Image 1 (cartoon, one colour):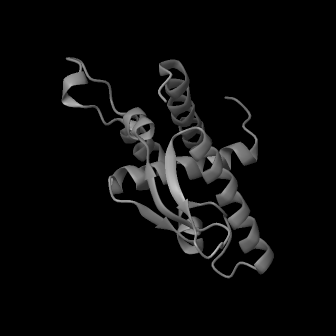
Image 2 (cartoon, helix red, strand yellow):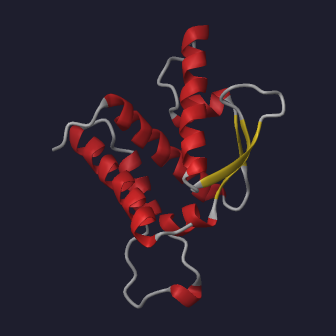
Length: 153
């Protein structure tokens, strides 16, 4: 098993949870505020987080959301009130929804593979054990490898 740095493991956990929520709500956009961000796992802090911890959650959210947007997985509108960690109209792009498993009928194969969103949902509930964290890492890795190999833009 590979030693995964804690910040990458945190990123993997957040990406899986965010992708699951966005996939399940598609095409309806989500609004992500500080409470939603904590629920998704942007910051792994208690409900009574200090101001410093809350700011850290917002910074994590901003960094992860910006990276996913730059890579073409999601789109969103900035918060009109300029609050860090708050995003409006968040939804998957065509690239994001396609990689996770949506496939137009005209492109379906006779022997379909299990959609990545199903794998993500399975592993997202078992991330506390080392084997669960490894499974989570493999699913996130598979998502990004598929994005790179298919050249989906």
